[in-house]
Image (cartoon, rainbow, N blue to C red; front, side, top):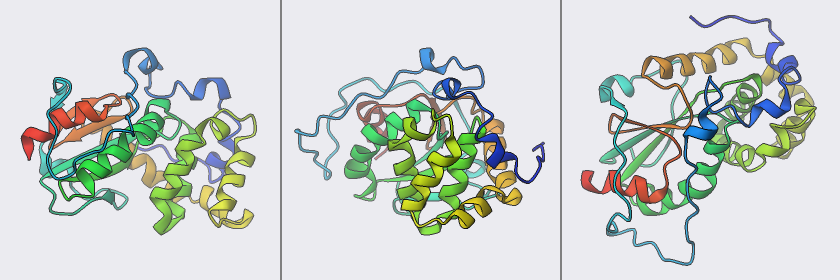
Length: 244
């Protein structure tokens, strides 16, 4: 069940969470910092052959579980945000939290290579879903949703500037400054973060992830197989290439 909170709960809650605690918010237990390996940076000096998958540089990680793909891809409380072609042979569903450093690492180091090597060539479709652990993560997702067609650019900016706003003593002001660059006014910013229906929908996306076995971020489902942790491009390649 999704707990209904007062209308201004997210906006006021931005100041309620201790800043030092937020960058460990990759799991409910707060242990994901030690348990989840960070993705390795991609060597940009080496060209990527998008036409032919490279030989995996590492062994494919073993999945932590499996779910029915049809159930995984059922419509939820919010429309899925998707990168890639609808008929791609491989579907990756990512559950992420805006205040999780491993999620930011994945989006900064691994996702660009994943797009170049697999998504842009039509081999992979990436479905991105919200799994917030705290009010600041909820606020970040709500602002991305309110930015409409700029959802992914807003997510990218928030991850790149994660330490600017996620650890700020005044997270509301920090997020407002970032949001103004994306076209928000003070009024539209506050309207977004006091939208109770949107807040409940974001929480429903998380609740659905929990039903699928997600308990830390990032968690990936690749053609139904569940992989917790920030996968490197080599690890993803080792999983994906046999499926192509």
